[in-house]
Image 1 (cartoon, rainbow, N blue to C red):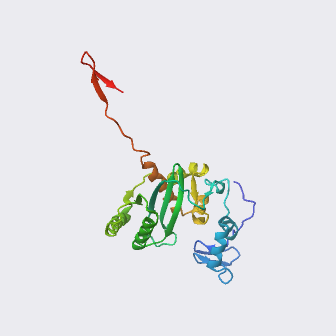
Image 2: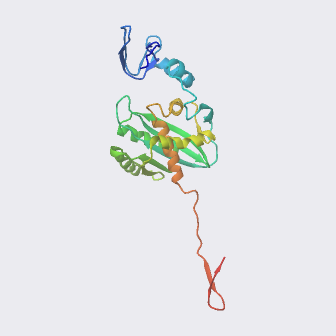
Image 3: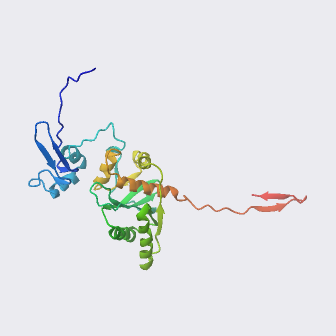
Amino acid sequence: MEQWVGEDWDIVSLPAINEDELSDTLSCGREIKLEEDKPLFPSKFTPFILQDIKQVNPLVFNCQWMQNPISKENQEFHEEWFNYYDELPKESGRVFTTVDPAFSKSKRADESVITTVKFIQDNMYILEQTAWKYDPAELEDKMLYHIKKWNPESIWVEAIAAQVTISFSLKRRLAKEQIFSTVIEEIRQKQDKNAKIRALIPLFRNGLIHHKRDMWEFEAQLLKFPRWRHDDRIDCTQMALYLYELQPWQQKVYKMPTIKHNKYGMPVLVK
């Protein structure tokens, strides 16, 4: 029987913002108790200060302030693949909006996410992404905001259980406001979520997905995938890719063949 001859260590990780409720007692007898989503030193670093620090450089904030470094060896998405844009190209394209509703008020639950993208040939431009723990009425308001601002040709809502009523309610509201340019559809995906998100990897790797520099929560979910408990923003993005791939690339016109008859009365196809 092997005997452990090493040392026992207590790993003490004190992030600037505690993401989980922690209550534990170390071997030395000292009790640690941190509330969820609370700053470690609120008198010195308020939530507003930490938010500003995070926006300057999310990666540094995650590693140094949150004590949660990202291993390059385990990453599936890499920051060197990120392709930013400041101004949207003037070329015409197709605009879609996808909605991933989540109505749980639990702090650990995912947020409801609305993502509007524009496809210009094979390039996806993320125009805007809205995420929060909305109630159904608030989510409907945000969906209407995306429709009025970006005028997508269709908006797809993930239809799961109670979320089905969202698309029905939005259709009635659009009809009341006489907005008929956007089609409301429901989407049901049965594939494993991680497998669906991995469909974005070749697009990122080839520089085909473009997003704004201030989308640091979106980037954090990409860099931590699949080991982080939140993936709502990137899941909603893959829904947009899935929706686009379902669309016909072009309208094909099939001409009726012209038939003539030769001197023997046999039909001959005229090209």
